[in-house]
Length: 429
Ligand code: PMP
Image 1 (cartoon, protein in one colour):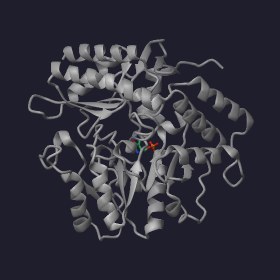
Image 2 (image 1 turned 120 degrees about the vertical axis):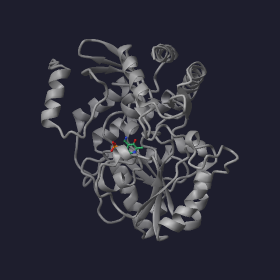
Image 3 (image 1 turned 90 degrees about the vertical axis):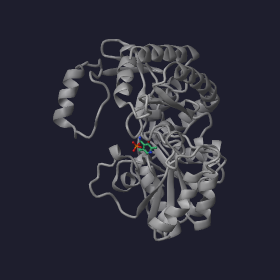
Image 4 (image 1 turned 90 degrees about the horizontal axis):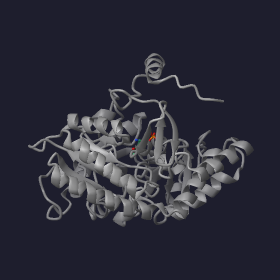
């Protein structure tokens, strides 16, 4: 069936008329995307874009990766859906595979269809295991859009709930560029992590089930904690019997130069959540826990669509591609090239206040001369890159951080093109 390209104006009209307005979009004059091929996207006029945002860290293996597409098509043509009340092979093969690729003793999985659900489920499991109902999360974190996960979210823009879930306290994040304690690493001795002790003592009843954190805060502005941060956090949590839930929804599956970003910190989470890149664009999410914790969840808890044969087959094919192509190593190598390039641009353009991140999850925080956030400039760079055929992201508390999270199949030439384009976009300001 040929596509009919109704065009961006008509899409915007229908969106306004028929969709709930919280679903927002980028760009003053958004284009209609109609086709994807690995690291490239095409709009309805045939214009080609280098995708440096990957649908927010989703298509790590590239758009319409032929191996993943073939696995999906084969499964769609054989058995699409049955529900977990019947036995099928794909879901258990995926669970077995996740036990192999996740760190430490993480072993038993539950499958759902999104990152939000994965975090919601992880919170429930933590409560079942500890018998406690309070949570702590980080300022500037994002964990989802449901009542509880939005309550765990520490970013004003994403907290639209006028009566957020209670029983949640916030700890300071490891935002070294704007350290809440005005300290410098390493002399700070991880004051932000130490502060967790204070939060437990002063803001909670002591009955805390879990502490939630993204390894690198994505929407928060690619906030990348220094090496020893999570070790210190885990020591404090262990002393209080609080579980560590690591949200790898945005950082997982090779993006940061390791299969999961928490591996860089040498810490074993008690529960880990994932989605986005797990299915390379198909809706599959999961939380995984140590057996001792997972085994507390015994009463029926099925998800109708979670881990169905098609999304499980997609995830299995995605993991096969990540391993075969050694995408974590590729992200590490190309990420270094991109980061070095961004650091060179920082020398040339003082508006780049900070460059941070790991692998191909990088951010450049744009600031005025007095270091105050520069969101208007960030928008201008975003628009200018789009005009020149490059899609990048923006995030951060003040929406002033350029985010680079391309498909991991991106090439060195693409990175050079991105850096040259940024040079032109920043030079124009
Ligand atoms: N956690 C993190 C770290 C995320 O970035 C997101 C989505 N941006 C979510 C959870 C929620 O995932 P989903 O949109 O799949 O529900």
